[in-house]
Image (cartoon, rainbow, N blue to C red; front, side, top):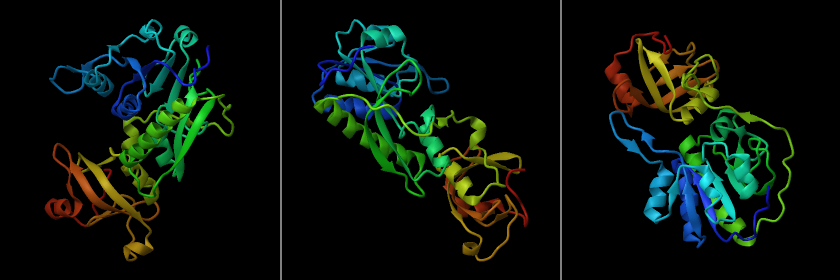
Length: 299
């Protein structure tokens, strides 16, 4: 594998989802020559709709940059650096041997290597995370780090909030570091943790957990529970201790107005989404639901 040039002359950009769009636009706005964008193939993202491009492909076409779905095209693109941001595919070794590549990873490596670093940082209650500009190696997220930026996680920050903060930090870091030259990467040091992919069942609320832990699941944006044999999404909510809830003692999942019992403390609902309907104010939903005394979620 070859070393990155300092600074790069021509760049290939490899990315797919919406969070990879701002770094692409930041590179173009800063005057870097992005000669090729490689992204995931078009696919059907809406029921009954036609195949749609990835957000990165749509942005590249808007910017007038050639697009490919084949990673191997990087080799013949006349570029001296590949920039990878949430590409979603493994880059073959022969491509890495031909073109040096750097990756923006959304964590402070080696904490949270893997697929879902933002989500795992929130679920773990981390107060600090960040972004790393790292060397791309054959093995996942093990490359040396050229630069990093720390980003605090607010106590009630949602996944969307955190994603916005990290993308902003990533854009600044990418433009600055590529413009001044990368130098030598530092090997990762410290305890390695893995950010396993979030599964559908991970969003289901277990009311026996503490209110703080339940709120963290809600902050990911897709939390749900069951109520009267239908699904109820919990869009936003706030954890409180029992003392702060006026001394009421509620069993896990027990509903009292907009307050729900948990294994430790209570969760105060702010917005919910009944199955098949739009999100509504939780107090309004409670008024219309005609809850019976002692009703519980999750049954």
